[in-house]
Length: 408
RNA sequence: GCGGGUGUCGUCAAGUGGUUAAGACCUCGGAUUGUGGUUCCGAUAUUCGUGGGUUCGAAUCCCAUCUCCCGCCCCA
Image (cartoon, rainbow, N blue to C red; front, side, top):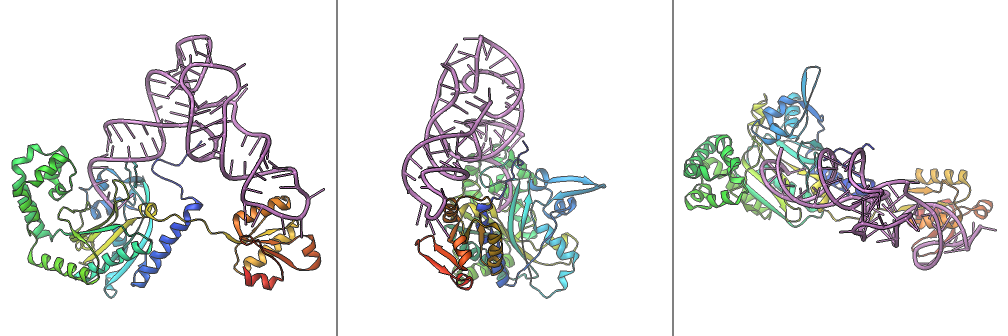
């Protein structure tokens, strides 16, 4: 027996209505805000992710599906920002009038141990906005994320924001942090020792209790909570907060929020749910002002977010499947085929019996799958009318085809 | 990569060494040969994730292996 691969799954017919809702709402809400859909390939040159996502990240280091073909190293995309930026550059989109607004949806691939809210093939929906440095862009992007989540009926969500500063002030902060942590270096967990060397910002993300205790020490808190970011960055962050206040979007400033991808600067944000288990983020995003340039394009500021659709799905209210408008009950398959076609041509959802079941069995099936039984038996065919039975009220009437169209 | 749990019909399950592996739902058929959703009857696992082993005898014990789930790491 060949089975689905570990960390992958089928999206079954009974799950599709919520997936359609996610996709339709994305199209509507993002289009209304001037975002256009972009579909990029599912695999790209490995180098794109190494340079784009950052080679100190776990995603690039140990989670990529990479393969060789004709001496090229290719990788199944682990996220889509790098691909969108590649397309942005390659198609000369920097020459379009700013802002350039794009959105996408589709499968992503990461080689990780699956668990609740985490698969190896999963789907993301996200937006990216290019060309605007001002905090209005940050505010719009966060607002869009919140509106989208609300449109899916998700309410118990928390928005967390933080500012990482620019490369200059962040460097200063990293050094300060390393300095004040130096005396405790030996007490840190193995991962933190690593982070201390490679990516000190990620220290703030550690979930090991002993490390957390160290970080709570007053002299360290003073550095973490201190306003390390430069005046310009600070102003940008204040602007963003005032915009969010004006939009009536509730948020918490979380100084410990550091996103795991290397390309972020200034604004980073996450939207979390308490109903998801330990993988509680449904949305993550931030500003990446240097990525376009780093990948060889014109220097272009940008900001975006991505959401995990499987996580959204698990939070959405499950719904009953839609019933067909009509089910044809007849012993004459030719008439059934003809009538089904005519009704479907008129945009009605119709099915009928293919197996020559007895009348009672056909009615039983009709009651299960449809709102109306369309009865086309010998009597009806002989006398030229159609019997229509409302399966909720049990009312039955004789109709013509035109009347049928009006009722269904 | 590390830790914990799990695996019996399409689904949910009972069963913890002894003759034919409960039950429920779904599906299919009949009661009801042109009127359903209620009711009643019936059918559907030579087999218990897979491969070995112990035993007169294994779904039940042992070993290996795989799956899925949950947690760590990381992320959406």
